[in-house]
Image 1 (cartoon, rainbow, N blue to C red):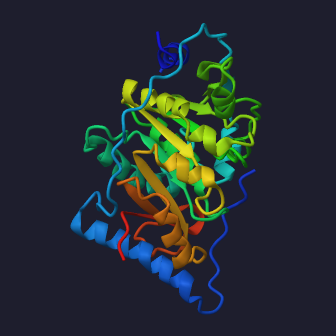
Image 2: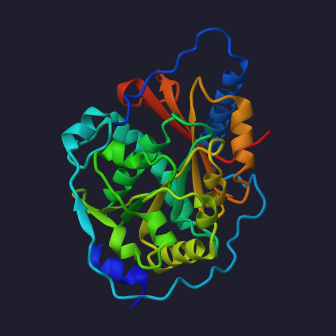
Image 3: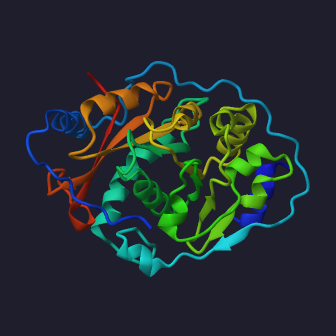
Length: 322
């Protein structure tokens, strides 16, 4: 029985309040970046397309086998999240009913599911990385909300991986502590994935923490062991969505390495903050992935046609064009 089979048998199936953008003065680069993202979103909505093949390549090479299976120590634990606290932070919760932010993420995840349905052979479209050009643009906020929203689907299970291994943010958002995780599995052959996975009190949502920081994190994320682990995750359980909260692309080398394994990437772009130069540079670092979505975050007002919770809207467009 493989590592992943054992895990499946065992499991059964403080973010800062979001701030509105400030447009003080005429910041040409910021406006240009917003225009780039909005243009993609508007064109995608107008022609009904789900994908723009903006980049060449992106097919996965055959990955090596995962490392040999050893007896598990059955240490998987359950994390209990304070759902009232999450609601106060404008996060989606299963018991909240219909909310503006919940509807926003429902619309966005339909694009992701469409890519899953139409994925080409060899593309692990259920491996989804959420990133941003720079820090503090809302990537963890979006990754956690995606994970919770997707876990509410009738026929999906979700694994949220905290892959921001240098500065993990998922524990702060969800309110838990974890000493071990992904990096410990890659670094120590005595640690199994099953040992560090966490169940949660949100049905069908599991968490893989980042684990202890390591000096050679980039090399470990690019290793054969990592490729084998991800390939087995993607191939063996096609109904499972695996969401990676990645480091910002322009702040850490780990993000570009992680991107080479992904079937889909969601790039969070903060309205009024992300410059055109930063956006282009970030996109140039993920050229191996054919399915790249731009999510315009913290939009002030009804510009996108549907409002986000607390005055923030979410738009989505695929690909990138000059």
